[in-house]
Image 1 (cartoon, rainbow, N blue to C red):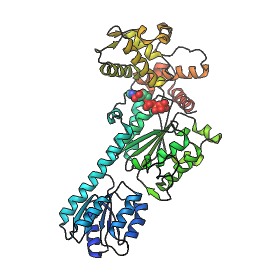
Image 2 (image 1 turned 30 degrees about the vertical axis):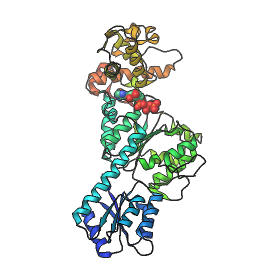
Image 3 (image 1 turned 60 degrees about the vertical axis):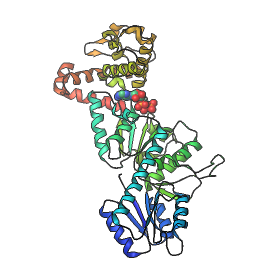
Image 4 (image 1 turned 45 degrees about the vertical axis):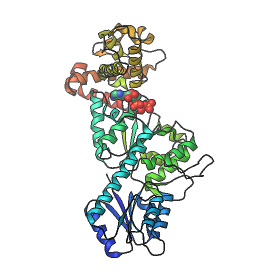
Length: 464
Ligand SMILES: Nc1ncnc2c1ncn2[C@@H]1O[C@H](COP(=O)(O)OP(=O)(O)OP(=O)(O)O)[C@@H](O)[C@H]1O
C-alpha cells in the first residue's frame, strides 16, 4: 500500500508514543490523538485507513468515538484496544462496526499482525469497490499497439510522467486516437498501479448526477439520496482518477475540481466535512480548450492547473506505419472473440486500410475490422470485405512514391489535405531512414533546414 495512514488514539502517553515510534519505523504514516475529540478532528485532514482506538478515554469514551467515526467515514478499519476482557463491550464495538479487538496488555507482534490484516482488508475492500464500478479488465491497458516514431515518443512520455507521484496530466488528441488507453498506461506504469484507476466521461451524465458521482453524497443531500454514497474522488484514493472529455465539465463542477487540485480535499454533497485523499488526476479532451476559454465555457485557472503536463496523441493518419499492425491486432482479437478461424488481410485490403484518412482514428479502424470479421466468407479478407466506403476508392489513387496516402475526400479543406500529404511523405521518409533527418531530406529532395522548418510548421498546424 502506498501510504499506510494509521491513527493511534490513546490517553496513555507512554503506550501511545511507543506505538507511534514502532509503527513509524515500520513504514506507516502515523498520527496520534490523546482524546476522542482530537481523533475526530484528525479524521478530516488525515483520512486514516486504520485506527487503533483505546476504549477508555477521558470525556468521550471509545464506543462513542467509534460511532462517530462510522457515521462519517466508513472506509476505515477500527481496532479497539481495551484494558478489560469485557465481552459486553466487545459485542457492542463489533456491532458498531469495529474491525477487531485486542486486550491490554498485548504482545506487540500480536498487535502488528492485527494492524497488518486491517490494512490488507481495507485494500481488498477498495479493490472490490473499484472492480464493481469499472467491471473492466485491467489487462487492456497493456495493449497499446504501435511502433511508429510518434508512438515511441508517446511511450517515453508516458514513462516519464508515470515516474512522477501526482503530476496532473492533460491528454489531447482527436476522438478515437487512444487517449483512454494512454491514461490507463500512465496509471499502470506508475507506483499507483496496485491502487484504483477510476474513470468517468464528463459528458456522460447530467450536471447533478455527475457532481454526486464525483464527490459522493450524504443521505438526504437531495431527494433521491436514500443513503450515503462515496464518490470517485474517494474511490480513487491512493490511485488515479481519469476525467475523460474534461472540456464538457460544467462550470459549477470546474470550480470544485479547481478547489480539489489546490487542497487535495473535497466535500461530499450535503456534508460540510472536508475529505482528504491522495489521487492523481489525469484528464483528456478532444476539444479546443483555448477556444472554450475564450467562449467562457472553460475556466482559464483550471486549464493552467490541468495543463501541468500535456500529452498529444496524434491522429492515426500521422502514423500510417501502425495501421497494418493495428488491423492485424484487431483481426486476431475479433476472430478469437467470435470463435472464428484465424484470418488475414490481403495485400490490396491492407493497402486500402493504410491509405484511408481515418477521421474516426483507431476506433473507426477497429469498427471496420469488426465488421469485416462478422461478414467474412473467406479466411483472406480482400478489399470487398472492408465495406462500401472502401470499394469506391481506387487503389491507384492511394499509391504514392513514398507509400500510401489518402485520396481527397469530398468537402475536405485543401490546405489540410496538402498538409496531411506533406506530413505523410515526411513521416514515411523519416521512418525509412530510421529517423535520420539528413538522409530523409535527401530522399525528399529538400535541405535539412527545409525539412526542420516544415516539421515545425506541421507541428504548429496540428496543435491549432
Ligand atoms: N494504439 C492502440 N492500440 C490498440 N487499441 C487502440 C489503440 N488506440 C485506440 N485503441 C482502441 O480504439 C478505441 C478508441 O480508443 P479510446 O477510447 O482510447 O480513444 P479516445 O481518444 O479516448 O476517444 P474519445 O476522445 O472519443 O474518448 C478503443 O477501443 C481502444 O481500445
